[in-house]
Image (cartoon, rainbow, N blue to C red; front, side, top):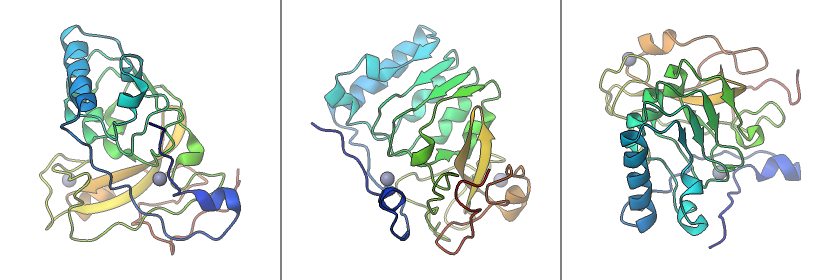
Length: 231
Ligand SMILES: [Zn+2]
Ligand SMILES: [Zn+2]
């Protein structure tokens, strides 16, 4: 099975005008052997207190490429310092990554379909090193691909958030306030998706670094981004 590439960022290489981008909605097949194997690898790493979690090293490539997200059980990986996801087909990472309290190094390099990260990754206080393919990110400084427009009053099925990214209060369609924010995380500035319970929680978000959109926003083509290559 060849690795599926996405066309979300085609415009940045062809030089054509950006059209709107959309969040990947691929659902994980949780019945396949690849997913069951991944769940098992998480359990083993948690029980044996592994310091490195590198599922691609323990899975056949055709199995690894069937994985589009990580299980919520990654929250159990409290001893893991290095999370290696090289060359994955991931389209999202669950907020539970924020519970990997010892994480120091995050390496999803060449995961070309991973265009954003959950805000909860900022809870990994020891995170110091990251190797991210920045050209695959929404709002990257090289090409400024647009952020997908976030819906209002809808809980997105693909990621179905249950807790506020900021205060942990429960969120549902009636109180979910989703915003994008670009923040420095370890080595890189990453586009982060915030599932907030209120405007109050959005107001508590940190200030983005220079050269990035200077406040939380809801995405879409109308959002003015800093110029390309602006350093
Ligand atoms: Zn894509
Ligand atoms: Zn909140």
